[in-house]
Each structure stands twice: as C-alpha cells, then as structure tokens.
Length: 101
Length: 404
Image (cartoon, rainbow over all chains, first blue to last red; front, side, top):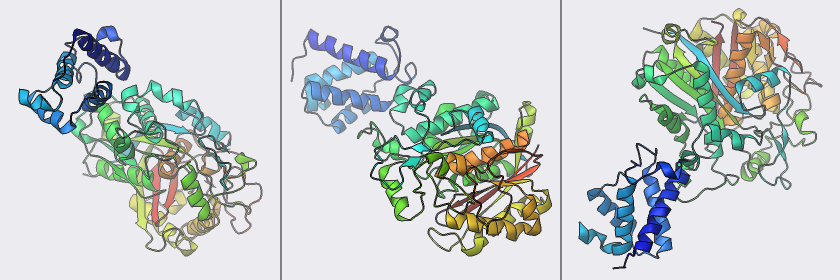
C-alpha cells in the first residue's frame, strides 16, 4: 500500500482537471468536483481508461484494467470528484483495490 | 403507400472547396482540383498527383467537430461529418422536431482512411478509426437519431447505393429523413501503388490539372480524388410540411451486379446498359425525357468506351441529343464518395439549369462520339438527369433525378 500524501492528492486533482479541460475544450474554472463527466462535459468512458494509463505511468502502478473494471462496476463514477477519489484509491491500493469492495 | 422522395439539403468537401457553393462555382467554371500530392512523399510513385482537399481543411473541421471526438476519427471521417453537418444545415432541419426513430443515416464507405498517411493513430483510437460504420455512427450520435444507421460498400458505387437504399426507406414509409452520402480518400502510397499495378491510374503527372481527361483519345487512367458528399433525402410530405426548399426529386434508381469480373466492366457495357434501363423503368420516365447524364466517366480506356456504348444501347439515336459530362475530369475519382458528390452535381444541374463540363477534352476519342460537354459548362433546361456509378466487382448504380 502506497502512502498518498497531500501533495499527491493535489497533483492527481490537477492532472484530472487539466485532462478534462483540454479534452473537452472547457475552461478549467468551469470544472468542479461536482461536475458530471457525461452530462456536463460530454465526456466518455474512454477518458477514464486514458487517465488510468497516465497515472499508471506516472506512479509506476501495478494494476490491471480488469481489476479496475470490477471495482468500477460496484463503485460507478459519475463526477470529477468521484473520479479523483477512485484514482487516489488506485494509487494507494493498486491491485488490492478489490479488497475494499 | 409509396411516397415521393426529395432532396432538401446537400454538403460537399472536395478538392474544389470546403462547401457547396465553392464546389458548384468551380465546377461550372471548369476548374481542376488535381495537384501534386502533399499528403505523403510521392516522389517514388508512378502517379504523383491527386485531387486532395485544400490544406485549410485541417483548420476548417475544428469548427464542426470537438477535439475529443476528432481524436477518434480519421481525416476521412472528419470530411464526412463536415459534409453531413453542412447538409443538415442546408436543409434547415431541426431533428428535435422529428420522430427520431424515422430518421436514418446511410453512408457509402470503402475504407475509413486509417492508412499510412493518417496521423495520431494510437492503440486507444485505432478501432474507432478503422470501423467502417464509424461515419454513420458519428452522424447518428451528433443528432441522436434512432433510425437505423449503417454503411454500404459497393466500391465506387457505394454512396450511390446509400442514396438508393435511402430512397427505398422513405418510399416504403420506413423513414421520413435519410442522411445519405459517402466519404473517401485513398491518397496514400500503398493504394496508389496498387492501382498503378492494375494500370488503372493516369501517370501523366505534368501538368496535374490536365491528367484526368475522360472520353479523350489520350486518356490513360483515372486520378484519385478525396472528399465527401452528403445529401438529405426527405419524404415529399415532410419537406412540404415544413416549407423546405426542394432541390430535386430522387425519382428512382437501378442497381445491379455484373457477375463478370473483379475489375473490368462487362464487355460492351452490357451491365451498365442494363442498370440504366432498370433505373428508368423504376421511374416510368421515358428515354426521351432525359436531359443530362452525369457519367461515371473515369478517364480509363474501358470505362469511357463501355459507358458510351451503354448509353447508345439504351437511348439509340437519342443518345446523341443528351449532354453527358464527367465530374471526375475536375474532382478526380473520389471512390466511395463519388456517387453522392456526382449526385449532388446532377441535382444542382437540375436546380440551376446548368450542365457542367468534361474538362481536358481537347482530343476526343473518335470512337466516342457523344456530346460530352467539352471544356465549358452550358445553360440547359434540365428536367430529368441520370447519375451513373460503376464499381470494381461489378457494382452498378444509376440514380434518376427529376426537377421538382
């Protein structure tokens, strides 16, 4: 289990906000933790996968997509805040994230 | 109850421009879109010229497609989306006012253009870029349409077939509005080499604008073009109810398979003639009523010879009185998009009473003695016009348009 510091949490939030602002062509100031990814940003599920790839590389995570998929089925993500929380859990627990279910 | 099918909107992107108006103006002016290839280094290819879209397209499409969606599309798919959105806008349709289960999309697609010239293909987007149903799906998504959306591949007749099936769906009361069309680009090293190996392409590289010369004695093959054409087919009832401008009626069509050869048309144009006959029969329009034919006119030895023979077989002496022209002399051969792009040229010929020329017809083939509208467009009352499309594999299609 990795220690997720406040610095990492801030970093994750910054990356997620920047990613959606860039991909969805919206001003970053228009995004909040309550923003709905599909309804408000016209986003798609692939974005979630792309972000996971970004974090896997950045933090050298050992986690399989199918593991995340199983977790996400039971813990669906709709908002930016929920997505950030899940990314932090993935960084923290990697493949053991399913033990949280 | 069989219903009449009308055309209420059109969109084109091609080498002659990125909108309908510039395309029509330049076609009437008899201008060529053929230039040296810039999409890749063609210096080692036998054919080094093509009718590419203007470079401005790379900026132009951004006004139509969001970055996120664009990253999942090929350049060809983007062409199709731009033409489709222009066509919908041209038609003035607000899909929110329609029963979306009766609005469909049918796109002729030979390939999506996910070739060696396509940029920014990644493992994450390669499937979306390669799906031949991507264009119809993206258009359907754009307007959240609930009628069937699908792709048709009949080679160079693909988008003509798309319009034909669209006609059937409206005619048979299965739909009220069809977004029909096609998009294509095979301007890449591998496919040009492939067509060169079949001796299908012109190798008269200099000057580029003179290379595509249908019906000429010195024609030596076609020139590849790229682009997209999309039309809005609508039931007459729907169009009249909303007071739409009707550009022409799609009166009927003929499609057929030659069962003869994977590349060559049936000898003496028999398959082509059968298709034209079938198209006319579907409408009840007499041969004497046909005022113009937009030919397949590829500038290959066989097509132009056999298409001429086919027209003579169908129309007899009347063939000499019908102006015929090849848009490919200006646009090159846009393959999967050709049926719709040339259909649009035909519709606009009816709407404006102007027939566009076959350019580069300076040395007519003495065996091909019909009126091919050489080099200069012509004012002519056009009540009924045909548009021919013939594809590798023996796929034939003739569309019949009538002034409304």
